Image (cartoon, rainbow, N blue to C red; front, side, top):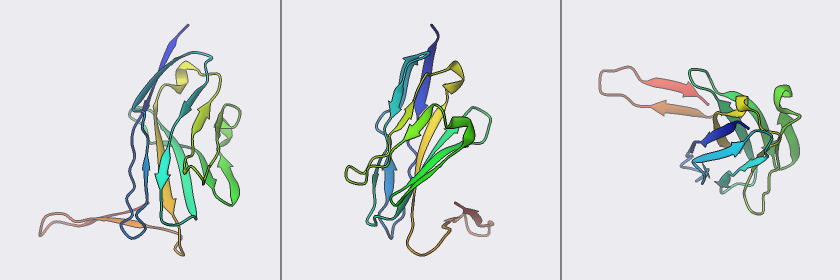
Length: 141
C-alpha cells in the first residue's frame, strides 16, 4: 500500500471589523491508500452569515477549488471532487471538516480552509502597503 501525506496548512483570513478567522489544528496527516481521512477546520466569526471554502494545492500550481459551504444552503462541490470529497458546515460547533474517502496517491497535497464573512458586500479587498515611494499592491479576494 502506498502511504499518502496530506499537509494541512493554516490559512488565516483576518477581518478586523468582523473578527473572523479560520484555524486548521492539524498541520500534517499521513494515511494509506484507500483510507478515509477528515481534515479539521474551525472558524470564528461575529456574523452567522459566513462562506467556507476548501482548496487543494499542489506544488508549483495554483490552488484548486474543491467546495464551499454556506449556513443556509448546501453550497457547491467541484465536479472532479464530488464522489470522494465531502464537507458539512456545523454552525453550532463552528467547524467545516473535509472528509476524503478512498484516498489516492494523487490526493497528496496541501489543503486550505478559507472563510469569507459576508455582510452586504460581495467582494473584499486586501490592501498591502509597501515602503514609501513604492507601488501599493491590491488583490481582490
